[in-house]
Length: 89
Image (cartoon, rainbow, N blue to C red):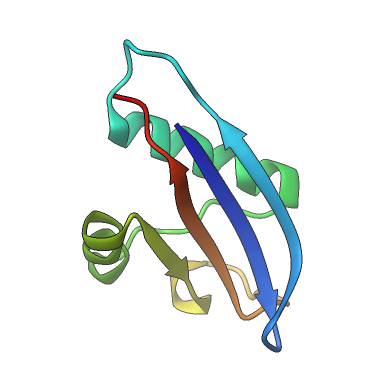
C-alpha cells in the first residue's frame, strides 16, 4: 500500500510525502493509521483525530482531508490530505 500525504494552504500544496507499507500481516486499517503517524512525524504535526466525516470519506473514496477541527493545536495550513495511490491485495 502506498499513501500520499499532502499539506495544502491557499490552494497550493506546500509539502508532500509518500509512505509505503507492504506488510501482508497487517490489516488495511492498521496500514492507514501507521501511514498517518509516519506522515505526521515527517511534517512535524500531531496526529489528527478521525472524525466520522473523515472515516466515511476514506471508506468511500480512499482519500480524506483533515481540517483544523481534527487537530487539537492550531495549524498553519488549510488541511492535511491522505490519498491511497496503490493498494496491495
